[in-house]
Structures are given as structure tokens and as C-alpha cells.
Image (cartoon, rainbow, N blue to C red; front, side, top):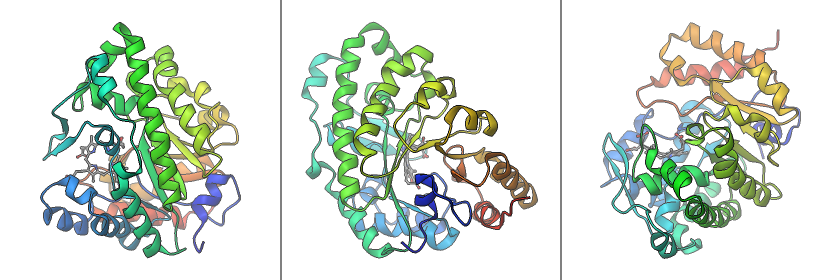
Length: 340
Ligand code: CP3
């Protein structure tokens, strides 16, 4: 591969410089994305049209000069594959007409198969072909707990009290749903690898709403199952947003890379995670600051993490109203970094 910085860093090998990409790089920050998005009926049409998904995936590579492409898709492909379709409401986010409430609802869910996500497989194959061996292509999925949260709540939530009600009042039911989601997600990620994904990231976006004990039982245990199945195939990144309280347990995951949010101090993370590769963790809101501040914060971040076993990124997805020039400044600042 011509630029294999990210894969080398993910495997723990030495690199000529720190690799960089951004979560949500293939989205509304880019004018090309907004144009393609305006040309389709809705978000799901874009996700389900491989030519458009491929075009949108490649735009940040051309415009921002990032060191990896992440396939344009969504974590909600999984609930839909299992029989729970979603809509992406304009400026509101995901919405499910049906939600999971009972054992019967769980029994009715289907364990997904290749034909349920063929459009993602085709988008990956096409993107792999277009990228050639220029850059790594990243695949992804939501963590079982994060998918569980959407399937039970039916949308985002401030408290996730519906999802949490099930784990506390009907834990066996909750485990049966998490088990089905996990089995489906393993198949899904294996298909992504077959179709050309060089690394896969598991987004545990709502891990942080659980507590120390519940995190292990309802999220980490299931992430571990996925990691154990995928790690022999490709490097795996676990991104446990807001779940730093569980870092000692997270450190035992059999994955090479841990994604960090901005709440975490680099020195503490290095101590906890040993020789794993760390990815992150600038506050996405820092990209609203001026370019001098962005450059300085980026260099400080790299200095704190060190250049080995490190992938520069934000601590969560880039916000859609971030000026593209500021995003580009972040990417360039990583590339310019010289160790002091
Ligand atoms: O560039 C990339 O990172 C690849 C594409 C990507 C999208 N969603 C596209 C998208 C990825 C990796 C995701 C993951 C995802 N989706 C997560 C995990 C990451 C995270 O941010 O924690 C979650 C929780 C979702 C669910 C989801 N999808 C929500 C809550 C929303 C609405 C909020 C928002 O940002 O508007 C989406 C919509 C979505 N997914 C958009 C994009 C580009 C915006 C919708 C649009 O264009 O209309």
C-alpha cells in the first residue's frame, strides 16, 4: 500500500510521521457531500447507493488529505438488517417506527446475513477499486450496546432511560437482544473485511451512559466477543465514548487500537493502555478556534501522546458546521509535526 501509515501505527510499527483521519470526515463539513445529499430523496438512499456512497467516501481523501478513507454508511444498517428499519429525520436524527419491548419482539428479529447489507459490501468493493492500493479503507459498526440503545429507545435520548430500564428490570431479555445484535455484527464486520476494509472500528457512542459494573456486563463483554472474532483478520479499534471509567477493563480487550475522547489525559491513557495504539482525542469544538490555536493544540496533543503507537483524530465526530479550512488546518498540523 502506498500510504500505509495508519495500518503500521495500528499494528504498533514505527512510522515516518503520525497518521491522521477524522471521525465523520465524510459528511456535512464538505460541500461535495452536501451537494450529493441534496440530490437524493433521503439519507438512506445515499447509504444504499454504492456509487454515491463511494463518491462521498473519497471526497475527504481529495479535499482534506487524510491518511484513510472511512466507508460512508451508518451504524443503523444493523437494526435495519435485523428487521427494524429507521428514518433519518432532517435536523433531528434517527427515528424508528417500531422499537423492541418484549421477548416476542426479540424473537421476531432476524440474525442478519450478507444479503441484508449487500449495498455496504458493494460500496466497499467499489471504493476499494477506486482507491487501489493508495490508502487504507476503514469499516465500522456500532457496539451492541449502542445499537441496543437505538432499538429500544427508537431515537437518540438524553437519559437513555428506556434502554437502561430494560437492563435493570429485565436483564435476561436485554442479554438476549445484545446476543443477537452481536452475532449479526460479527457477520457484518467479517463481510466488510472480505469486501476490502483494512481495519474496523467499533463505535460505542453511548457506552458512557452506563456505570462501572453495568458497562462490563452490558457493553464491554459483547465488544470483546466482536474483537476476538475480528482481530485475527484485521486491526480493530474500539471507541468507548465516555467510558474512561472502565479503562482498566478496556485495556484487556484483544484489540490493537483504543479510540479516546477528549476527557482523557494522554499520560494516564498511556499508563493504562500499555503498548496499544491510541487514537484521538482533540475536542471537536477546538476546531471552531482560529488556525493558530488549532495548530498549537494539535502539536501539544501529539507531543503528549508521542509519535509511536498513535493515530491523530478528534475525540468524537467533527461537527457539521466546522469550517473546512479549520479541518484542513488540523490535518496539515499533524503532517507538519516535528518532535521537539
Ligand atoms: O465520515 C464518517 O465517519 C463515515 C460515516 C458515518 C456516518 N455515521 C454518516 C452519517 C459514521 C462512521 C457514522 C456512525 C454513527 N452513526 C454513529 C457513531 C459515531 C458517533 O458519532 O458517535 C452514530 C451514533 C450514528 C447514528 C446517527 N447517524 C446519528 C445520531 C445521526 C444524526 C446526527 C447527525 O450527525 O446528524 C446520524 C446521521 C448521519 N450519519 C449523518 C452522516 C453524514 C448526517 C445525516 C445527513 O447527512 O443528513
